[in-house]
Image (cartoon, rainbow, N blue to C red; front, side):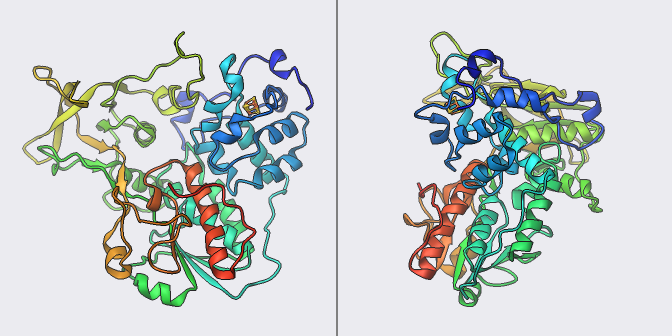
Length: 479
Ligand code: SF4
């Protein structure tokens, strides 16, 4: 341990500065600047190297956080990336996109703000790429076994990388025109620039993973045909079915699901010519849903030049600081005002939409909203509180209900659990031999860190199925 009193010398939790709002609204680049290396080392030195590191247990990947905090404090970046990659295939994804349950678990958070674990993580991987320390790790030998991974989000990519490195011949199928799933088209550039994804895909290609974009399993190739062609199949198709708001006026023009809007925005930023693109330019935008996807819509709408942005959330405003009766740390990154909220717009809490109001052309012109109250354990509109909010673009960001079931059901006959997710046993195996499921398709909508952890774990199960034994790690089991 380099400095046992680091947390006493550096009491303040410091993150790198965010670029000025006026500047960042003019482009799509990431919001945070790089952290000064001296400050980064001081922040990493705040880690107490706990005997029982709750940060480690709070991370589904089991990241070796105290180890790489210490290494970064001592300026040992090369060793730090080795320890980070030992448990996490894609620290550039989690370092930018994870809400950091590790920080909520940090013991230092009892008396001081938590260690800036996520910032240390992204700094390690950025430094590693800059210095050429991230190199392909092709397998020593091939097993002769083939695996199809369906879906190229974080769970599918993690499974593919682990299985390729174990010597299997892996093909990743993606129905979109580019690889990356939600990381490609669901996440705006200002949260994670796509160059981070590209550099990781280049590493995977060099290791031998094969990518097949623009191929929809269930339509272009039937699921049962895929199963016949490959020794094992991993279903990592996510939980893309959005939660709808079936109220009067839902079919009006200008009412869209968030993911439809974000996908088109990401394609436009990538330089694609998007026909009839849904854009917020000069629109009065209302985003329904107070989560991360809603915040992504807000930031995107501001960059597209929205006239006004309102964000509706059915719940209460989250507490911004700890109360005296709650000494345990809050989730530091979740309860901050996010970068997107800092950029403008209005937030309304305890607001329930009861009707989309249209104009003579059939386009939405307003939302009728009401305050909410708790009745029988549910939040419902309070009578007499209704009012109109002008809106000519409405984005529904109310979460996701689960995986698309139709073709999986018809072509493979895999059952679904009571929540609508693909049913699986304790080894991520479906009822069809050789077909496994990982990530949101089996778990339901969850965090990117869980997707990577499930991808790593399903790889261990597939490897054992194909070879009778495995040395691959399995950080999590199915719930
Ligand atoms: Fe360091 Fe916090 Fe983990 Fe303790 S819980 S080892 S202080 S990061």
